[in-house]
Length: 215
Image 1: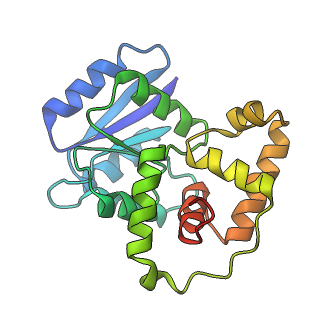
Image 2 (image 1 turned 90 degrees about the vertical axis):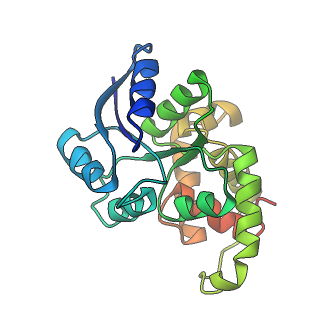
């Protein structure tokens, strides 16, 4: 069972998401929060597998939560941003702060549950449309990012793996798509992170976009 916490300042939204996820057999909502501070407390208490996080909330918002989680130990749960705000800057800020996925609230139940399963399995979920928006936002901010370390050249196979990472594939799904052993995929991902100087998969995608590797 995948344990989920829903963080949103609107009670009706939280209840709606809980009701929808109750229709699944493998996902359970174990907690709810209406702002950033209570979200951290709920995460500490329930140790969820995935956090569904709104960005715009009173007091401490979603970006604050992401940054607070990034400062914690490596056992922090993956975060799926779920918001009504279709904004390039917010997407980029959320990904930079450590979000592993980004969906709008008009998403279907099927898409939402797939995203939760992908994140619980260690993957990321950056759809092609979101990747395009990230690319535009990254290029607009390029002058502020000149301090990125030198990026080593990726092999053709590593770029292929990274593209699938950007599309939200887990290591298992990448292995199936490329007819590779899962261990081989893990090695490729580790090498990509090392070459890009990235701390995680999402950061690797951002750095690759900045370097025009995924253009």
